[in-house]
Image (cartoon, rainbow, N blue to C red):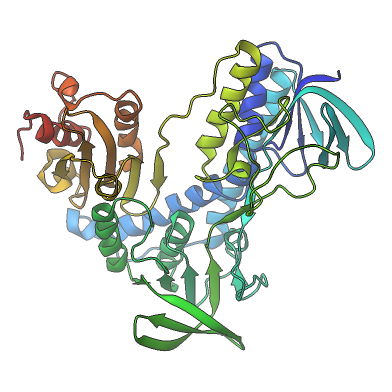
Length: 455
């Protein structure tokens, strides 16, 4: 064999899995058509968060007067925002390339196809052999049957990264993480933004109490939001016209740009060229067992290409799990997956929601602590927010949901609690520094277990 393990795709799954494998002594390679880092680094999580950080400064300047600072004038440089984003992405790309060299991982540029149980075809010509193969090819932005991207007026988030100009108006179709983050970015850069979501709440499937708070805050930031609303009948002229329908209400609107943020589809086509019994579902996601093996035991798949949730940290966690399974026979773990949306305020969630508990007929206890009751939140003028903990009748933590400042940074402790099925009572003697936002977690758990102080 040329390699012990070969990853197809150098996104979070491919590059982190490859490093984990190399550190365990496996001769490892990664085949990638683009730059290492995948969608997350090159076109998704990282550049978006870099731009959001710049945009957050605009919000902070707008809020300065509330805390006694007066700013008469400031200037936004789209060019410098873009250059900063490029610097960050380039630095992290070089970092991955350095780690590959440091760990003797071979990075192969090209298109890989699996032509046999242990055989990979590179660019349709060169054959490479590997004892184990992991498909980690990720996903790409989806379209609607009646609304296709043209790259000019109807676009995906990839088209927004260059910040060529700020349109007068933009419709965002889809109120998930991608849609809401880009809605905020363009609203603060001066665009009139409307978000439309066919489901009855933003961020469908997450805790409704939390998303209702977030929706109110987004509306305050000049974003129009229509939930339980469908769009149809696109008309492309100087602008894009669409028909909106919410219940019995029907109306027409026009927008300079339409951003499609309606989910993603797997990059699974043309991967398998040999006569291999690998199954795909009706959406193109590769079917795997609990250890992420396809029907061919030496061929694995992980990350976006096997289905939701489509999260970078899910992909890397699974890839590292595959390596442990190959090396040690350790079954791949499937722990609760946290999710964070980097809006203003942030939203973070893990485990069971109140709605899911009701659907399953579970009797649960709910601990809530509003940011406004916490010392640190008041000191830093971040009073909008809520920590919400869901526990069973024995106080075992089943889920946790936060909307508020630094929600993503606060979530890991609660993720650990959900993963380990810890009880709220176990946190009574955990001392949080004062004043910190972390105290909000203690108070929310304390409301369930009877030790809260400030509520």
